[in-house]
Amino acid sequence: MELEDKTIIVTGASSGIGAAAAKLFASEGANVVLGARRGAELEALADSIHQAGGQAVFLAGDVRDEGYAKALVDLAGKAFGGLDGAFNNAGIVGDMQPVSDMAIGNWTDVISVNLTAAFLAAKAQVPAMKARGGGSIVFTSSFVGFSNGGLPGMGAYAASKAGLIGFARSLASDHAAEGIRVNTLLPGGTITPMGGENDPAAQEFIAGLHPMKRMAAAIEIAQAALFLLSHRSSFVTGSPMIADGGVSVRLT
Image 1 (spheres, rainbow, N blue to C red):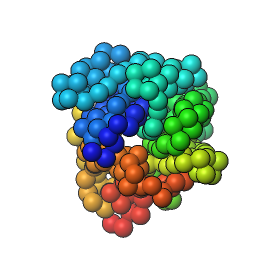
Image 2: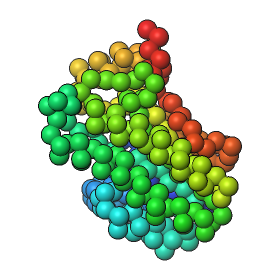
Image 3: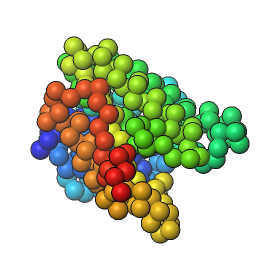
């Protein structure tokens, strides 16, 4: 039980990587605090975790809201006595178009959800983890905006995800001596609703970008997050951990 008796926040938990991670963490003994905008989906996920013998609570809200970030931490304390880790996974792609054609509203939305929300999450989570004597924070970044993983039409997304890596490194430096580890997880193309789950043509194109010639299953990315949240990564902090099927090196 890699996360036995640990309390973990998971945002973006209503589907995709977040839902897979929440189920996996619960199966590994964690008490999970589920966050996303869609309350009905969170309730269904919490019910499935309970039916499997796990522990879960949920709260719907918007990660761009500072009050919501604090409310998730407060819920962790009220339901389970504190907070040990967080998988800050919520994110959006936004409109895919050249920057010269991009509306400022799209830029603002993507940066707000993918980057500013990370700041708000950390601001709420770090004090709670200090009170526990340490913890682990994981942000979902992307191969897009890292190394040679740039893709056309994704300027806002790339900026937000690259920014997450720098933010996490600074945060890791700030809090390493306090026992709080901070890392980013960089998935490749993953079969999720946001990743073309219902679009075979899109899946085929995205799979072809990867040297492994396939996309990841959500559980594969969740397993990487589990490593970063568990004691097995006890000497890992400030790291951009790549789980991208080789797309960032594009050997073939």
